[in-house]
Image (cartoon, rainbow, N blue to C red; front, side, top):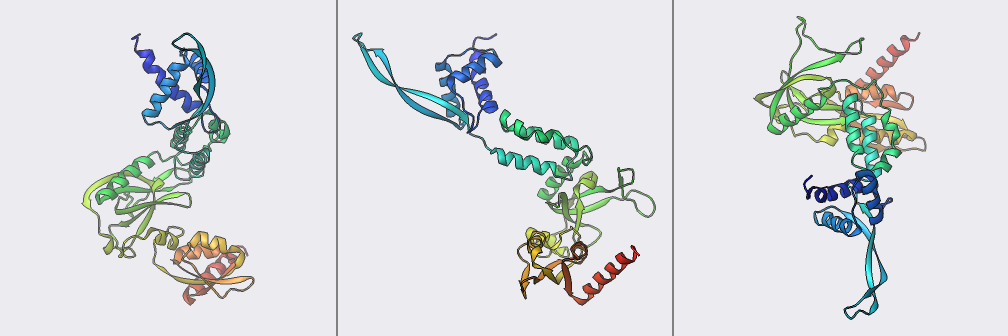
Length: 353
């Protein structure tokens, strides 16, 4: 082996030890680093070499913290006489992490609760996130090894995101197939009335995550209104050379895409027109109302038990929401929507008679 090779390896192995074994709560002395080098890397190094390489890593830009203590040691001066001098001892070395354990756990849990990332890719991502911390973190999150096998299986998802990202950045259209799940629990492309697989040509504007799903906000080129498509149902996507339709020509996006406002008004990602809806609600669900509709919701006529809320929302989405919270709210306006809710509830009751 080249005589320089062990020296090059030493600094790499010391960095690897800091990544594996240290954080703010787990620190290592130079002696402990030397022991790990010998037992796990079959490499011997004295404290001077370890200290020199640690300082080099700091010079290279790695954020390594350590403590400094001073002790008195006895040496001989140039006259051969003994004297005590101060000596600095560096210890308690640890690598400062880009992410705290809590932040990494939050990232992992968001993947675990995701409904749109395929099983194999989710597992791979989690392993990469694990690698950003040390062995102590891995012991804390053993539950991540038990991923449910029934997660989505559309392995094209990340490729779809890449193509859409490029299309949005370049302002170009895309074409794709859009799928529905069958009773065989597999995706099947939507078809035209003649039985041919339908190709969707759309103008992509933004990708968003909501309710555990990833959606594309766009315009289906055949029409003038905004549309939303789930990314995990898109397959065979292609980037086209055709420029996108300007947003100002899309109904509902004439003034651009105000994303927080758009998401608050399209709580189930239906793409129909929005309108003002007023409802009376029990006060104990105010938190849920704000969670769903955002902080633009207007409250009035508050009593000890109830409050009136006014929101701007997609009618189809509000219909679903009103049915979901039927025991706790009463829609009061507009009158035409009140009639829609009554009819829907009557039909639901009839099914159980």
